[in-house]
Amino acid sequence: MGFSFIHAADLHLGRPLGLRGVPDFLEQSAQRVDERLLNRLVDCCCAKGVDFLLLSGDVFDDAGPSLRLQRSFQRAMETLHQGGVRVYIVEGNHDAGVWDTFLFSLPSSVHCFGAALESVGQKVGGWEVEIWGVNFQPNHRRESQTGLFPPSSPADWSAVLLHAEQGESGEYHPLLHGQLYDSPFSYHALGHEHSFQHWRHPDMVYPGVPQGRDRNETGEKGVCLVTVSQRGTHVELLPINEFQWLELSLDITAKDKESVWQDLVDQARTAANSSEAFLLCQVVLQGSTGFHSQFMDVGFQNELLESWQEECLQTQSIWIDGLTYRGEPAVCFQRVSEQDSFFGEVLRGITAADLPEEIRRLEKRLGVTLCQEHVKEDARRLSAIFLTDESNGVDFDVD
Ligand SMILES: [Mn+2]
Image (cartoon, rainbow, N blue to C red; front, top):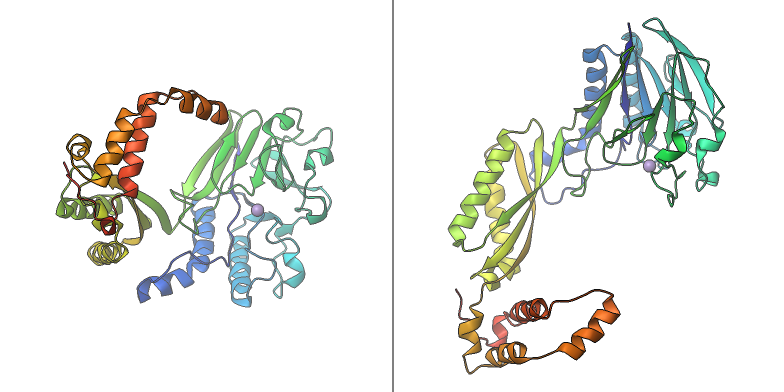
């Protein structure tokens, strides 16, 4: 016999998806993402038949959520109440004090923890379970909350909900895994870190955000399904994100422009076909190319981006949100250095330079050991990048 629960955190309800200049259908869809996120969370709890739900802070993006959002949250809690799923919530640094501004009342099966660490008992699957929790404390945020822990817990199994930052130098209740070796709790239901992390012995889990909100939050996002039995605790991340941020990196070395265009379209389609979520994609072009100055041109970049957006939108499940060009010019240094030109002279200077003294000084300043040939190679590449601008009148002999 055992029991199971869902552990979620950092829903950040009310934080917009970081999209710019998207088509109307996407704009409208993005506006209601929070309601659907709540529905997905509730569906997940009901489908898995869990006994309770833990929410480890930053459920809301700020302490004054809109009435629409409050009402959606209330409805979600009522559905869970009817389904027999108890809910335990702590406040995070974003939503500290949120319940003071709440207009709607929540069902009795929802327990919102307070400013002092306390516990609630529950009997599930033949186990005496204790759920502990304490809100994020803005006035004591630099202090670790492990000092508040009781010496032991009499229950068969216990969890504690904390909104805390991983690491010694954290500004939001710093927490180290090592501090928990003597913890009285079986499971540490943490919030604040936005990516999924799980340490064992004892279990210390950050589910991460269940919905990435901007281009920095790439990859599948979800909630943790935790099953507890005599054999131990099993933690599994269930993706529930409707939109998924993705970086598509394309090597453009030695490719003509049409191949670059087609390769990206193919990669985007493949990614879209293998994902359940609607993909929000950042394209990064890298490598060396004979078309460097054209790729550097903002007008051309915008045209390329629009063309990809239009093409990829036909799949109905991917949007190309942005394009970053990190390429460099493909230059035949040998041929250029034989030319009677300014750049030729620069390259001849770099090649001829014997820089032991300068390099030794540089090594001392940087505290590293440098290879003279690498320094020269970098100097050649950098001078090529700086001098690619056509307005300099440099004539490139491209591979
Ligand atoms: Mn937080």
